[in-house]
Length: 325
Image (tube, rainbow, N blue to C red):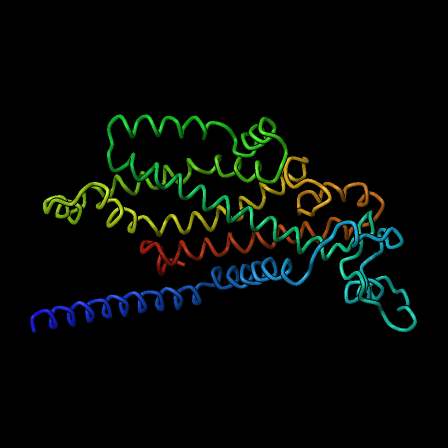
């Protein structure tokens, strides 16, 4: 009978814990919707991430098959072409406007819209990879060094200071140059440059938490250092880590585009937004604005969306900022 009572109490406790977490999540979503920057940024991020996930599934890109030299530098048709003719006072083509190249065509006759879609998938994929690696490695280093202190903290933080002494993009360029130009090496290089940010952030949180009363109580009942870090220090460090991770996604997209622009990222003939910007420079000089405009605006929207979302998350998750805006 006592066993049955204990099992029933355990189930009820789990249900209560789930109910509390669901209530906290519901409250978080409500406050996010009430924050203008989070609302706008969230919409942009959802649209961009949805397109980046769907485009590779719905469109099998073949750089050889999809190019047509007869369509080389064809201007945008559909809505953009119609609007351009209206603004320039030019007559619309007889039989209506075609819709073969909504964003125009590049120097090889490839559809800029298709290349932007696949390039966006590459850029966001790199961003997710960079965030996962940087958070996993950086948070582990910061958690251990901040909780243990002493020579461990001094040694790890001095190593992080050495990495931070170099501008992140220049360090990434140097690492890719040494390892070889490729998208994989570019992702790893960008992740390495961002590890110190999360290490220092997690370390500062661990230092402030390790002397808290509930940590002292856990030590008094015989909890090990590892269990205390995982059960108390890490969960209480998640809020700033989530905000920083959101902001890093935008930074990773910019640095990926910069490496691609310099020819150190995704290699031809596969599309990437930074590489498309580099390839569009000669066309821009001759008035082919669409070849640079659409990949450039895609980068702007991705970074803007994640920055607005990160700013809104900071307002929501930091109790000191609630109600100040």
